[in-house]
Image 1 (tube, rainbow, N blue to C red):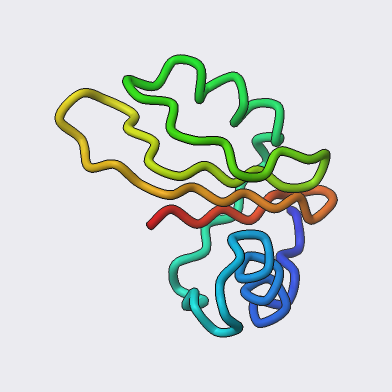
Image 2: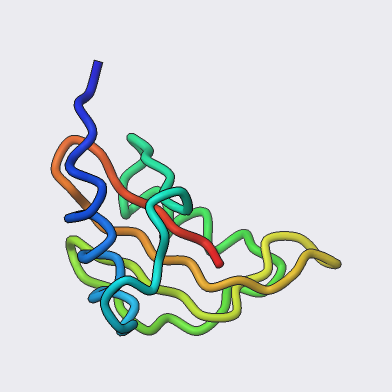
Length: 91
């Protein structure tokens, strides 16, 4: 089983990646996944609206205004690589 990193440190990383002030995200908003940043890039190509790519590095993906399916709400998606797992927040 994969150990999850310290949630407060993860919140800080997500805040920084999304360009938000410290404490913007709540720990309860974080999802952890084994999907890679590359998996998220590939999935984004099949979205109804892929959104605007704001950050795309080896360790961070941040997309504004993505719409997975027609009729769904547009969201901001932030993924940060933490080694064995990725932290994801969608808002």
